[in-house]
Image (cartoon, rainbow, N blue to C red):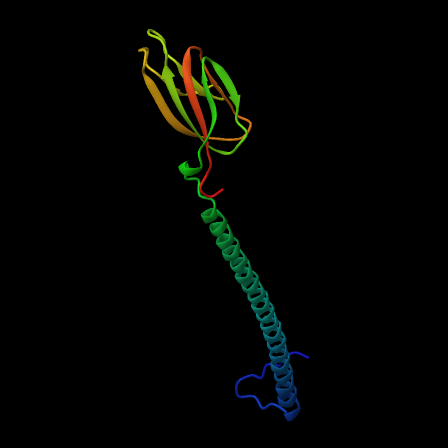
Length: 173
């Protein structure tokens, strides 16, 4: 039933008035039920989102904690590897005159000392075909240096010079 219009100044029967009030009461109850249902749905969605956010926050906190642990471990490992040359443990591995080559079988430092034995000659020292040291062209000229090397590299030098090569380990191993 729909709401019945009562004209101004007209007398309405109690039945018509009761029907109108009943209609309005039903409509109010229906709207209130819908509001209650929608409110419950909204509250449920908020609770679900809150649970999801709490779980995501816990997962993020756990991930950050794991990352901090990993960074701390990495820092400790990095600090334990000191690449500084340990000169007191240097060992001569080559001491020769004339050209040659040498296979490097360690990770660490290589110290070299070149001595020019002839005039008008420039002597060069290479690691994996990269020049790391050279003398001038005067007899008696010297060149010395230290370079970081890896196992498997090859040291080479040209003829008519004296060379001393030393293995120098890292302080951190």
